[in-house]
Length: 285
DNA sequence: ATCCAGGATAGCG
DNA sequence: CGCTATCATGGA
Image 1: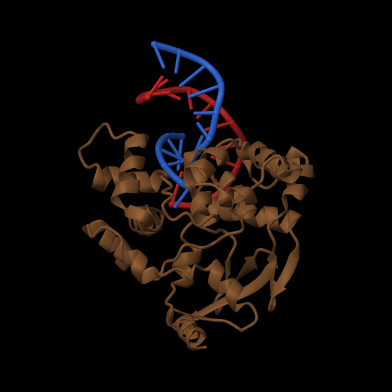
Image 2: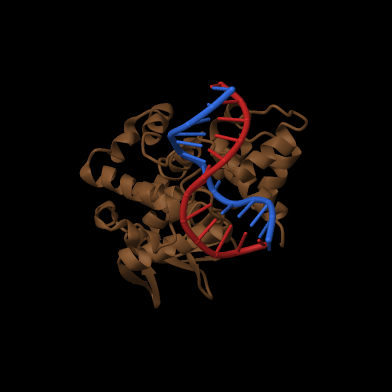
């Protein structure tokens, strides 16, 4: 009884920066409303609201929302494991309430397959088109929201239907993955029991999945917090700051450095660095 | 107009 | 192994 009161108390007090969490390139479907964000957690429509960096939500879906938003993660302890160099500290100070989301696996995999060499605003467009055309419409309060299409749905489509969603050269990869998962040839659930290295190797067997996308899925869906995705922005931070002056920093060297230097929650640190660097170094804002 | 984007991969040397 | 061209599309 004591214990449940203690955890209830923590529920109320856990800080979260909703905007940073939902708009830092982890998920791409939450639409801003006058008072919060509307979207789906799996097939559950939700209107997320926060006041003063504290989640405000009804009892009904509290457990679901808390899990999705990473409110179960011991953020203080996680931040304490980060290295204390100036850039890492600046990144944490930039958005102290940023959390890693726990996404549905298929949705995460398919979304990052469609993210290759795209800007975040374009990934949002692709996600929106896929959801509105091939997902189910639900209502979060008065806001229409859409589920992510099932593997079976995307597997049955003509490639032309996916091309209408602006997927470009990624369309074939998304459909191939949908067929692998729908047919049972690839068991996404089974990877939960694999080591991170083993799961990464298996994910990379899916066409269009390489190291970066595999690490995104490991981090954002399987909650492997040591997984460290290196995209163009994170590579920039590594080259500019942590490999300054080293002209022969290869991808493999940077990957190895990162997992060691940033520690057991390297992926969490990566998300802070990504969000900080992207918002402070991009042109035009 | 030109460059770039939360990349992966086949085809080179 | 490392390097390069290429894939489709729209934002900046």
